[in-house]
Length: 347
Image (cartoon, rainbow, N blue to C red):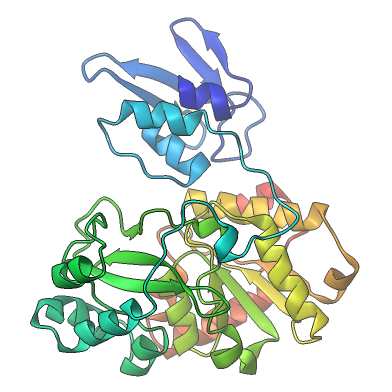
């Protein structure tokens, strides 16, 4: 019950079970039931209104953005009892972030070379080329981390297997601050894994290339969830940054909006997260934050959130073809304004 007691609202025991307000939809009366599956000895939940169900690990990932695997009950309790993060007034520089890994500046160059030349990387390269153009792959410096490279650069503790395409995460000043490994087999439980110590909440993916490659379309900015969404937007002429999940640092997003607004270039900001429940809820929460924390420079920006259908994300939507690119662009002009209600956003 550590997760439920930490995060759920109006938690109350009724009979043999506990009930709380469901976090996955606008719930005025507690409809989320928490119970124990005695045959499996697991704590489960089910919402009688939206039919969302799962276990305590699913709830933990939703609220914290951290993936915990079965059999790590101590980690569940530890993460559940972490203090809730609150927005900070200033985003620290990479040097000030505790626990971050120091990367050799040459690592990214070697990873790029291995992706294009190493026999070990053929599956990763084929996967990348089936989704993106060579120019896009080179622009975002995608790579491959072989066992030899991990040994040479003393990264033996990085659990990146041969079936991962590496998205290097660079800060605005072009410093390598983290690595993202994308599953190329679609068989792993985790689509993305991050390098040890990477504090992703302090960065947005794509910010290092924003001024170099995306200034032509500063007037409209898309905020998406994942690196592949950024690359897809880039290939279709859209400016995009990614949060790498739904655990969003609101202040970081607002700082980027302010920077572009003061340049008198940003006219429209579209929150375009995945069409699943966590994506929709994250879009609602960010919209709510921006609405409740206005600033003078925000009044000239059209703030909107786009709602994709379930199981859709910007990458899958845009990769369907040119006609869908036009649909995507049209959707950004007819998407809901952040003043819309929570109920309307979930409709």
